[in-house]
Length: 265
Image 1 (cartoon, rainbow, N blue to C red):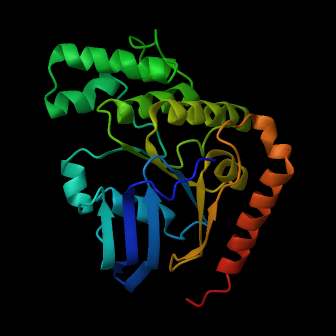
Image 2 (cartoon, rainbow, N blue to C red; image 1 turned 180 degrees about the vertical axis):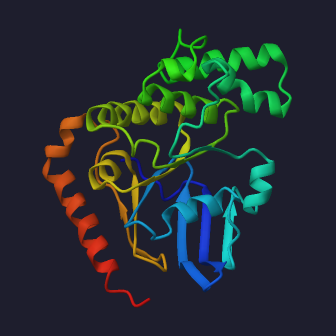
């Protein structure tokens, strides 16, 4: 994997805390999270349910507000980065409007942002080609498989060409065969675009296969128990998962997840 030490910092958190106020009192979702993500890195966040990995991704996207510490995106506050259109966001469900065609769904953020019609059409064609959906623009979401719908959702997030792509467990509901294929396609897309990717997952093999950096998180309150820089090469066929290096990284992730349970709440 290419050395990332000299890459510009894209996402930076220092001592980040985030607590939700509930009827039963405050719930500490994140506690003292410190992390640096460099430009062009593929960073996966893994941990048990409720560990705050999605909350951290949403904080980066200005969908949640930290209650302590510092968080910056491209040197700006998350809200400033949102207004600057610094990132695209892919949710767990594809979230496509059933009454819009695939092209119409991909085009939606471009319409909202006021891009000229010709530029909208050009960008839609470009990103549908990028996610291998060229020729499906006139189809409706219900005419596509779940995996194809998720690819359309990724195309929508890529349409305005943000440097950062945030993905919240986008393949979690898909079967293993489809998931493997989309993992391969996502790596190819990342290699072609050079975008910085933040990726939430519950799957150890998925995190190890995709990432240049794996962030292991503990149960609530969410803390980082380990940050693993991957030794795997950038070119990764699926059978790399049988290699000694892959198995060693997966073992370290598993150990980090176990260690997380020793943190006092």
